[in-house]
Picture 1 (cartoon, rainbow, N blue to C red):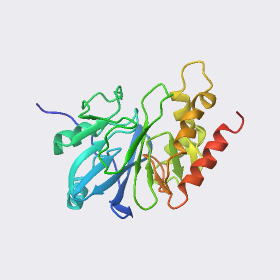
Picture 2 (picture 1 turned 180 degrees about the horizontal axis):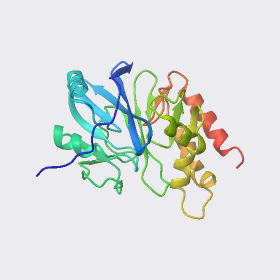
Picture 3 (picture 1 turned 30 degrees about the vertical axis):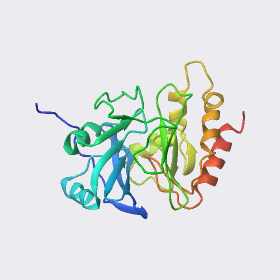
Length: 244
């Protein structure tokens, strides 16, 4: 059966962030004239690769991805992400991980569940779940080099608007995004139950997140934050919840 997978969106080349940690800066088309940045993180575990927040690549970059190792796992961390997950599942017959009910993009079905305290495709890694939101959202802590925190939409770190076109940049600004680390304002509004103050409702999850040990950070949107990410996240949480 012919499957019409979403087309490849513009993206950059594979970049190394840390030993055995890479990423691809890509884009997401939110509307016909509106594009924003979208990242795929790549964790190499021996000769195997774990793709986090998957982004489909052009054939030449896909070949370079395969040169890094065997593509064995793909992880969906955010409810509103996943348009390229089915392509990777079919193309590489990998193990696909997501949370229960993470079905904004219903395919593929999970081969393994993202669960806090459960199994993890990264040896020594651990999943964190945001438990108070309306929709599933998770983070992944990767050990080594002081710890790397991978998120999807909840936390984002922006140093530029690279990967966003004019409409995308202005849409983010109008939505309340600024440069630096931030608890994403649009994510908070989407995740709070109807009638609940999103700031009050979601605070406890971020306080739990700060118990994790990490120095580095990258999300599905924005830029890489090296070396002092825990302090940046703590300051962002304080700013978002200061008035409460």
